[in-house]
Structure formats: C-alpha cells, structure tokens
Amino acid sequence: MTPLFIPSPSQGVWHLGPFPIRGYALCIILGVIVAIWLGERRWVERGGIRGQVSDIAIWAVPFGLVGGRLYHVITDPARYFGTDGDPAAALYIWQGGLGIWGAIALGGVGAYIGSRRYGLKFPPLADALAPGIVIAQAIGRWGNWFNQELFGKPTTLPWALEIPDVSKRPEGYQQFETFHPTFLYECLWDLGVAGVVIWADRRFRLGHGRAFALYVMGYTLGRGWIEYLRIDTVEANDVFGLRLNVWTSIVMFLLGTAYFVIVGRRHPGREVDVFREGRRPDPDAAGDHPDDDATHSTDPTHSTDPTHPTDPPPVDTTPTTESKRDP
Image 1 (cartoon, helix red, strand yellow):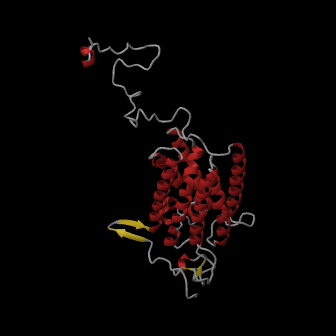
Image 2 (tube, one colour):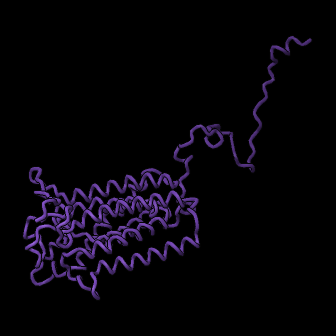
Image 3 (tube, helix red, strand yellow):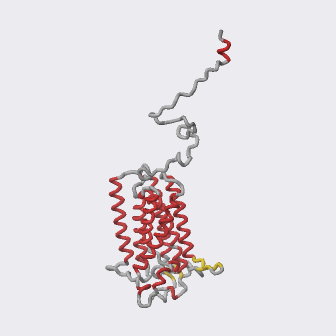
C-alpha cells in the first residue's frame, strides 16, 4: 500500500432529519449553478439580456438529466433489466450514472426549444454556455469521489485514490487498495478546456457555434484517454476492442473538428445579433429609455406620422418688455 494517497470520503450521504443529503447530488447542483452564472455573464457580453440563460436552463437541465440517465441505462441495460436487475433502479439517479453524451444531447434539445421560444439564435447561445458546461462537468466529477465509483486501474502513485470498501472494487481487483483517480484527472482536464475556450473565444472572436465545437474537441480529446484508464464494468465494455465511450469520444472529436473548420470558413467572425429576425425585444416598450422624448411623448396632438401632420404650436403674441419700450 502506497504511503501517500487520496482518501475516499468516509460517507457520501448525510441525513437532515428524514431527508438524505447526497454528495453526488450536491456536486451536480453546484455545477448547474456555476454553469448558469457563467453562461449568464457571457450571454450578456454577447448582446443577450440578463435572465435569459436562467429561462433556458428551465428547459435544458431537466432534458439533460433525462438524457444523461438514458445514455447510462442504454449502455448498461443488464444492470437494470437483466436476470438479477432492478428496473426501478434505473430511476435512482442519486446513486450515480449520468452519461455526459446523453446529457449534452438532450440538454441541447431542451436549450434549442427554449431558444426558439424566446426568439434567440441557438449557435451564439451554445457558444456562451460552452465554458460553463465543461466547468459543471468538472464539479460534477467529484460526485464520483463521494460515491467511490468510476476510478481507474490500480496504481501506487502518490496521488492514487484509496478505495477501502472492498465491495466498491470491481471484480478481479479486490486485492488492490489504490487506483487512478480518474475523477480528478477529468476535473483538471475540464478546467483546462474551459480556460482554452474562454481564451480562444476572446482572442479570435469565435461565433456561429465554434466555441462550443472547440469545447467538444477539447473535452473528447481528454475523455478518450481518461476513459481508457477506467476499469468499471459495463455491458458495452468492449466494442471492437475499445469501450463504447472511447469510440463516442473519437466520433464526437471528429464531428466537432469538422464543424469548427467548415463553419469557420463559411462564417468567419461572430454574429452581429443574437436574436432571431424580428424577435429582438423593444427597449422602449420595456421602459429602458424614459428620457427619450421623441418616442415617449405624452402630448395627444403629437404625431410622428408624416401623413398626419400636426398643427404648429400657437405663437405667443404677448409683447415682451423690450417691445413695450420701443417707440
């Protein structure tokens, strides 16, 4: 046993009276909050209106949770629908098991629906959200630490993760006590990807979904080698010699790269307007410019329509003091 290691938490659930507070859920919630906060700031910088990202999140987050769980269940159906499986456990998301690919796919569908409802262009919205999404993934990975799951191969490196509970170790690895902390590797990688996306977006003024494509490229590049370290058993553990998630990373990296290059050639630069045509909110109707007399006149005789000219204002014919002195 290595003298230096990362200890696993003594517990991942705390009880507040009859209510369980789970470390896994706290990490997911904190990640969502950070993603919305950062996405809101970036969206306003892009020309959006504060509060719109929060409105979009009402659609994206539930869709993402459903998508993440569906992907997990589809890639390991025997755990829930096999001979010894428990179908009801497919609903227990607090026990872990949210596939990021499904979360991004269905979460994107929810965000698209929300953007259409609020009259927003989807590509610039995706660009604004990209760094926050990958930071949320970095935070969410600590949920695996609380659950003592999804770690890598055995190692005696000083930063190895200790798994004291033998029942948490996969079959064939019960004799080992320390493993690669893949949750930590992915957390650090994701934070690096977020930094690269933010820097590149500001440096090259990425638009039309290219910042999001860069996030996909960066994340999948790291996820591929990190996934290769993992030893947790899933039904899709060996697909033509590689885990399904490794193949998914390869395909998504290629798609993200193709999108980044092709769209960059067709639409260099950034969108001028983030609202769909005819859907930009009227700032005057919202009362944002109360001092603009040209558009907020209260004079019932005033008209800006050239086909209905108004009478000229009456001329004051009262003699002034100077005129009274004039002989």
